[in-house]
Length: 329
Image 1 (cartoon, rainbow, N blue to C red):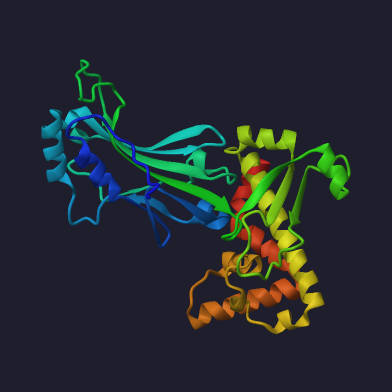
Image 2 (image 1 turned 45 degrees about the vertical axis):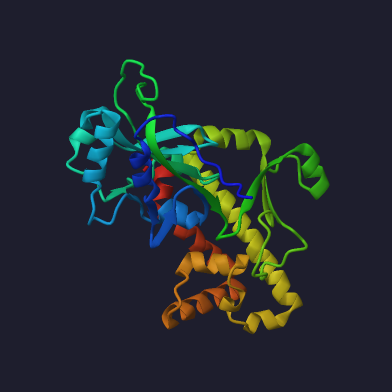
């Protein structure tokens, strides 16, 4: 028996609007993401890769079906607007990426690019964000049975749930309480601590979603929710990621010490692992010979000089400009 659920709109003639948005895709770098789905992204993808919403391929601008839909519902182009929003469930922020009435545009754009820097709702790495596109009423109408009439009522909707993770494998922020500090042997003033499940190897190709836990002081965690979009808040979140990455690097060194054969292995033999994910963040995951060689060299750097590797990784997430902005220059 199917468990799929659909939202039923009790309005006559709005199906065409939904059909148009059902074809919408989210472009992230080279990836095309399907709608009505939850997608796991690395921190690097989430913060740095180009992002846009693709409504059509440019060969069909949807003008004719939209005009037919408007006629069916008894509306004019000035009565309907196309809206794209990004929202952060955790930070309770909503940003408008695009909002145009249909009479203000010649046709539905093929693609809408997200601004740089990212909207506020996408500047906090914890939890990710939701991207939604709507056709909705631009003005109020007299109430009418089986017809949309209230301003803002959506006629069609598509959504993309983007969630951040550690290089393809989720890491969880957990409130650090006094009880947990005592249990894991932390001093009372420790505000963050990353821990990897002792039963998990950082070279495992399949890793549980809760393999990496990042403990954060409960008061600090609440403050992050308020300041995540500020320069200080963004910097602190990047530091939390680096804390988790250091835990992976440290565990990798311990496992290589216990099993020297790992030192001579190809990093691509561990594709999908936490270690492989860190390396891919620096040099990408392309399959050509040059990319494979770069990954091998970075893996060697992780083994022989983890401090340098981590500095390079941090620079991938935090530019010199970010640091100067934090200092007020």
